Structures are given as structure tokens and as C-alpha cells.
Amino acid sequence: MENKRVYGIDVGGTTVKIGLFEDGKLLRKWSVPTDISDGGKNIVPDIAASLPGPADGAAMAVPGAVLPDGTVNRCVNLGWGVCRPAETFAALTGIPCRVLNDANAAALGEQRQGGGQGYENVLFVALGTGVGAGVVLDGKVRAGAHGAAGEIGHLCLEPEDAQAKCTCGLTGCLETYCSATGIVRLAALAGRPGMSCKAVFDAAAAGDGAMEAVVDRSCDLLGRGLASACALIDPEAVVLGGGVALAGEFFRAKVQAAFRRYAFHACAATPIRQASLGSDAGFIGSALYAMEPGR
Amino acid sequence: MENKRVYGIDVGGTTVKIGLFEDGKLLRKWSVPTDISDGGKNIVPDIAASLPGPADGAAMAVPGAVLPDGTVNRCVNLGWGVCRPAETFAALTGIPCRVLNDANAAALGEQRQGGGQGYENVLFVALGTGVGAGVVLDGKVRAGAHGAAGEIGHLCLEPEDAQAKCTCGLTGCLETYCSATGIVRLAALAGRPGMSCKAVFDAAAAGDGAMEAVVDRSCDLLGRGLASACALIDPEAVVLGGGVALAGEFFRAKVQAAFRRYAFHACAATPIRQASLGSDAGFIGSALYAMEPGR
Image 1 (tube, rainbow over the protein chains, first blue to last red):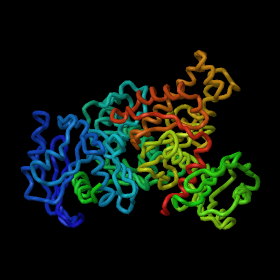
Image 2: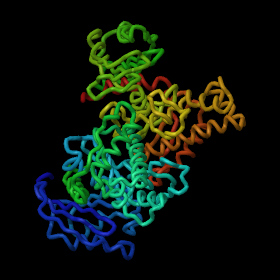
Image 3: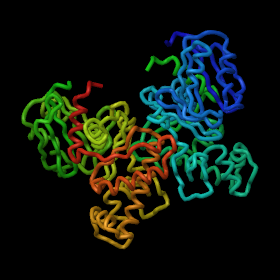
Image 4: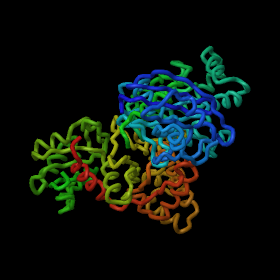
């Protein structure tokens, strides 16, 4: 259904981004606020009400685990428990809908049209408030048997670090060091409470030794986590996105150097690249997923 | 070529195991010694000379990284550098041959006919002198972009542990704690030099507290590594093979418990199972690989 009309939808904790595509081209994009009141029951109706007309298909990216049959297993940020939002969407709009994890959608978008272009096997990592990731193999995004594939944010790197409590219940997850929240936390531990993630990077780049140590520790752990991921999945390329990656080449080069310190020799030359679609990656990837042949 | 005659070959550091299959059934199996003299140049001719006749295809499992085009990127235990043993084999025998990593071959064997039967998505881990692993997704073994997929032995778990020097050049790799060699090393550090891996397990099972602490540390690190692997690959099941796993349910239960301590919630119930094909897994998996449609 490459040459059809589809909606790509990315449901975030504060905003839903939506794009309308025809023949694979973006016709228009818009957003609606995410209403998380009442267990998030208005989210899908609000999306449906914003659509400018019928379409042949849609896909919805959500911030939570999605099982192979399309069942969503909790989206804490949306107030959703176990639910099947694609069915609600289809009932309201008459448009068949698929659902996938938001990092997986962004991974597909970046692999096909962003920082991973030219590669069929890509690990995409989104470093934002949390850390999400998606694995694309042979051009197909892998959800995993329990919707957990690519959960690099929950690699347990420092199990003895009692200060690194993760929202998932574990201690020492990669996310507690490498998300924006994690970097702010490390800066506070280094005696600079209240700094934004961007301010930490700006200070580090300007030669502030304490903040460069914070950035170096974060990049070292990310490099170690990426080395683990590449030893297991061995993609052609890693693509870094999300707000943290906006720190640019200063950040990317540190992560690449750390990766090389820990990488298994056979995959130590795997390129670490920057994402290029920004916050549009999720709805673009969703549209690409909606256009894929039925599975 | 399911209903054809194929050879499955597993090249180990001391012995080459070979099976002849017809219509998918094993007709006979035998082995030849691995002659690693002269850079291992006699290995493939020795295999060729042992074959009882022509066949429609063959696959050879080797202990090293195999690139997607069949180039072997070093097999230290065989004395091989960069080489293309399938071409040598085909030139000597007239039988078309594929080559794959030995742990990947064993993974395919166990997934189809061993401890992973009934699952299409399996992580197989071979705990022997070293630690190898293979990833099977949708029933196909994944080699990775650089032949490194499934290299769980080189997850860097304890980068600060200077005593845990790995043969790969890194420090603190999973293999340095969870291989038979690693367990013997931990026992020596605990004041019991010269014990075999089996003796360590026997002592632990008999209530020797110091040796149970060694086994517990090894299982804790393996559980942590498997949790990382499942967060990234999210298979339906993990299958443990190799000599260490012969310690049986005493070992498997400890690994499953450790896995649950570190696993991401969505995949914490992933079963950890025992391999069942023993040292035949490699040549059985090679034969299955030889029977797969051309790629």
C-alpha cells in the first residue's frame, strides 16, 4: 500500500503528532494536546476528531510495550493500562490501524529516511527524558516476543549504585545515567543541582571540568551499553536521537570513543551516527509501518 | 533442499564432528582429529578425505567470526586467519558449502530440534571453555553485520575488575566469569586453585559455602548478561548449553533466579531452558543450515 493515503501518529506524553501521507509523501502535519485525564480515555477520540478525512490505513506509536498481537502493555505516561487502542481508533474512524512502540517507530523512520539511510540493520537510540530504542533488521522493525526488543535503557550497568534508582524498579540502568534526567541527576551529585541537561553540555563544552566529568561518565556508560548491544545484535550502524543527542558532534564523538573502548573487536568499527528527523521521526516511522504489507 | 543429502560439519579445536543427513534424517556421524599444524591448512582436506561420497550440499561451523559473504575473520583455535574455507571444501569435493559460526550452528540445532523446540525466537548460549551464543529470529540464525551477533561472552560487565582479563583484550567480559575457565579462575581466587569446573559445582551442590559463593557469583553475572540480552533481543526463550550447563537444574535454577533479579519487567518471565543435543548441536545445526533455501 505504498501508493495509498495513510496517517502516521505519534502519541507522546504531552502532544500527539500526526502526519498525513499520500504516495509516501507528507501532505500535512499537525498536533493535538495529549489529554491524560480519566486514564487517558480521550486520547484516541481527540486524535480521531482531528483527522481531515478518510484514509486507507494508519499506525499509532505509543510510549509503552506493544505485544505482537497489538495489545499495549501499559503506557504510564498516558495513564493507559492493558488496552487495544488500534481497535478504538478503527471503530471511531473506520480506518484500519496498527500500533507499535514509539522508539520502534522512530527507529524505522530514521533507518529509512534519517540518520540510518543506506543501512538495512540499524540500532536507533532515543536519549530523551528516558532512553528508548528500536532495532531494525533487514529493514523490518523488531518488536520482540514481549514488546521489549531494543530496551537498551534498562541494561543494568551498575547494579551496586544505590543512587541510580530507575523508574522500572531496577538499580543502575543505563537510563539513569544517559537520559536527560540522568545527566541532570549526575550534575546534581557533582554539586550543581538545578542545571538543565543542555546547560551541563554547554558548561562541559566551555571547559568546565566538573561538568565535563559528568558528560564523560554519561558517555562512557552509553558507549559501554552500545558495545553490549552491538555484541548481541551487531547492526551496520547505531543512530543516536532524542534531546540529549542535540549536543551534537561534541557528544557523538565522546560516545564513539567510549564505544570503541568496550566494543568486541569484530564490530568495533560500527559507525555511531546522528539522527536527522528530530521529533518527526515517530510519526514518519508510523506512516512507513502503516504502509508495510500486512503481517 | 529439505529432501536431499547433506553434510553437517562442526570444526572444533581438537575434533571435527561430521554428520551425513538424507531427507533431514541423520544416516551416520563420525569425527576426525583437528590438525592445527601449519596454520590449520590440513583441516579442510582431512574433512574432505573422510567423506563417504557425494552430496547435494554441506555447511561448516567454525569457531570464529563469519562475515555475511562467508569470509572467516580469524579462528584463533584453528590457526586460521582471514580465509574462505567453504571454497577450499567445494574445490576438493565438488560439494557446495556454506560456512557459519559454531555457536550460531548450535543455536539453530537447539532451536529446531533441541531445548528451543516450539520457539521461533531463541537466544542460545554455549558455556564451555569460552562463551559463545547464537540468535535465532523467525527461525533464521542471525550472523550480524560483522559476524558478531550473539557475542554475549564479550558483554563488558565489570570493566574495573583488573583480574578479569579476557582473551579478546577487554576486561570484565561475561566469559571471564561464566565460562568453565572463568569458574575455575573464580575458584582459584577463592583459595582453591586446580579445581575443575565440575568439581566446583559438585562442591557447591554438596554444601561447600565458598564454592557455592563462586557458583552464585558466576550465575549472578550470567543472569545479568542474559537480562541485558533479553532487553535488547527479547527472544521467546533462552537455551543454555555447553559443558557448564551440564551442572543441570542446580545451575539452571540459579541462573533463572539471577535473570529475574535484573530483567526488564516486560520480559522477566522469559524461560531459561537447558539444551538437549549436547555436542551434536553444531553439526546438526550445520546440516539444517545447509538445507535452508539459498540466500
